[in-house]
Image 1 (cartoon, rainbow, N blue to C red):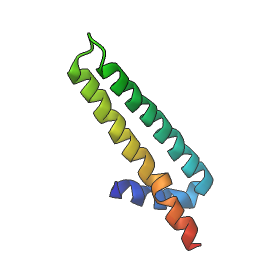
Image 2 (cartoon, rainbow, N blue to C red):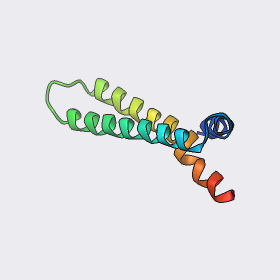
Image 3 (cartoon, rainbow, N blue to C red):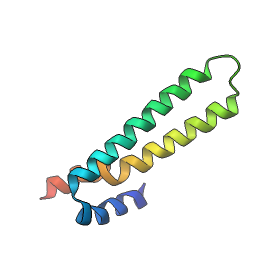
Image 4 (cartoon, rainbow, N blue to C red):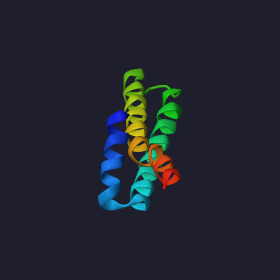
Length: 81
């Protein structure tokens, strides 16, 4: 999370705030949809718990990695300007 925040502060200088926040938002939405799918599939018979757990963990890691550089740091950067 801290690495993502540091990356976001460094990337905002070259790409700008808007593309960084929109990319962050897209990654967060995809990760949350994948997480919802993993929880929905987990309750059905025939799906291994290891697979559902792996997808859940991957989706949570993608959410954190997508949130930290854009949506996590940009509101604080915008407020300070």
